[in-house]
Amino acid sequence: MSKVCIFFATGYEEIEALTVVDILRRAEIDVDMISVTGEKTVTSSHNITVEMDKLFNEVNFENVDMLVLPGGMPGTTNLEAFEPLMDKVDEFYNNGKYVAAICAAPSILGHKGILKGKTACSYPTFESHLEGAEVSKKAAVVDGNVITGRGMGAAIPFALAILTELKGSEEAEAMKEKIVYESRI
Image 1 (cartoon, helix red, strand yellow):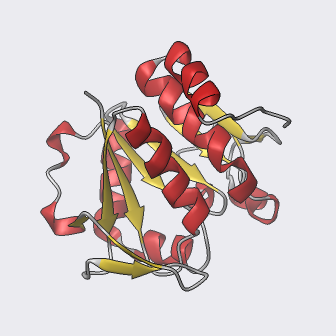
Image 2: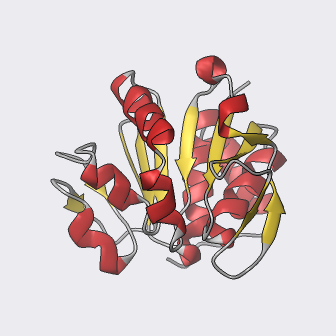
């Protein structure tokens, strides 16, 4: 079974974060919501407080297959400022494990040099931060072990791209039907 950790910092974008959690859990993928704040509850950019499964220092990363960074402001800035997470992003990417980011969060991958020579997408005002990438306008892009999404409106395609990578396109197609999702993007 695949294992995914999604990271929450104060000011995260709730739809981007929780849509991924919801769709992956529906697909019976083991997903942990991880706080980087040192507290079990984290408040979003729209003042929605959610209780996390674990604190960062409680995570055993040995069996984790993917790290997911939701966007939002100042959530993205707060994630990027949390050095232990940034070290894990580097480690996962360098070891061929998946890193995924949506909206403003792909800027983190750009700043780290992870997107050089890759195709990626982000929220339009963050495209200049996708350093070295070919910028796409697609809702979600998979390039090797990097998955990026454009923004809140792309949360379902982003989650489905993650699901496709972890469990295959048949599982993602079945999920689309299950959640009555019809792509118009």
